[in-house]
Amino acid sequence: MRPDPVEGKPTIRGLRITVETVVRPVAGSWTFDEILSAYPDLEREDIKQALEYAAASANVPFYRFREPA
Image (cartoon, rainbow, N blue to C red):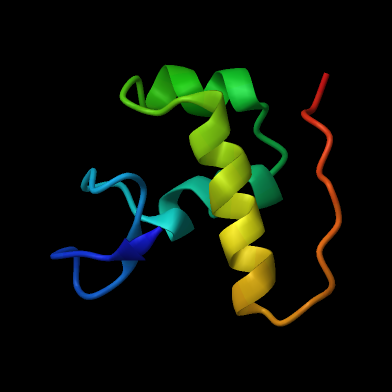
């Protein structure tokens, strides 16, 4: 993830999809499949990386996230 032209917010792989755009649905109990359906340019690894980035940004210990069933 890196800051990009989307209001200086970190984006996914240079796409115009912010980390926040991915993390908020996860927090709202969306499944990975629902997120991928809503944002077809994303890949599963993008969601995982966004969660890892958000955790690092929040300065919390790193834990391996399991993909929702």
